[in-house]
Length: 431
Figure 1: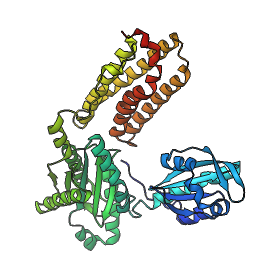
Figure 2: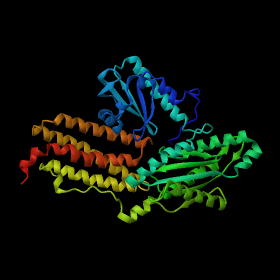
Figure 3: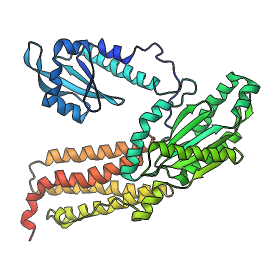
Figure 4: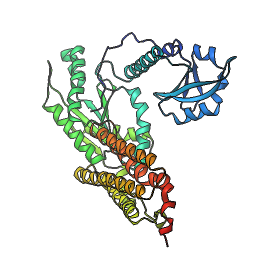
């Protein structure tokens, strides 16, 4: 389960503003739209604020891709100068770092700053008692999960749970025992959940589980597993404890507030119905998408205009579209048929590897001048696909990210952007 653990590893951490202000490199903290939030002392000594409006820096800020880039800027009283610049995302903001002569000591300090900022973000995102994510972190992540759900038409569900008669636990055993029950509950639920799920402490004895790529049916099964595990567990010094749970899948047209209101009502019904039970709101975007367009509403459509004129390459490109669509269809049913998705994924990955090798051999035979850069792009795409596959297995990203990368970036965009560069090699073969 994707859940932070409580830690006092850095209890005396200075505020992030202080870290940035006293750092010995020019730093500008910007919001996601590029507006200035903080210019540290080193930045103000070295540059005029207008330097941020320069096209090269605006391009780096807009793309927000990690890694140093060389740009020409104007320093205070120094005229044009060449500097290194990079942008680091800090929660919902962007941190622009400039350097004219990076030395090992400054690089070490920069690495330390990254670690300290990551620790600050972590400490601000967890519930100090239980180690679960806190409510503020829920507010930060829920919007992006809803955007991803709607974009890729992948379901996402909420499970809202409450400890039954928790006041009696506090009254009978004391608040220290009650706190222990809360901490132990997080561990029990964590063992029942999948690595992709996120557990948040909502307040008091209430918790929320955010379950990506999960419709209300799978959400119901997950909630029932949690309910059963808690019921069977014996809490230290207290004994048996039960929970009530509500489940609701997001509907694409509703706000996060309405979605949460539905799951809150489901929890209320569970408690009114006798407690120690699961109540499910049997509505969701997945049913609506299925009714609209069958197995998948996202399709890759092959057309003659995509042919380069080389029969082997064209045949393999067409096969990529076919296998890409099979993966899209399987991803829609990944909850109920994970084995079907796994087979579709392996078939597409195997064909991508074979196609890239065959394509490179054919391009070599025809003396393609840009073969080596093309080969490097192929290698990078395969490496990224392997990373995403491993990340999904480890619960560090969602199926939607993997499917979007394979179907959109590898199959569609690579053909439309990179492969078209060699099309003139084969035009003579087209009638």
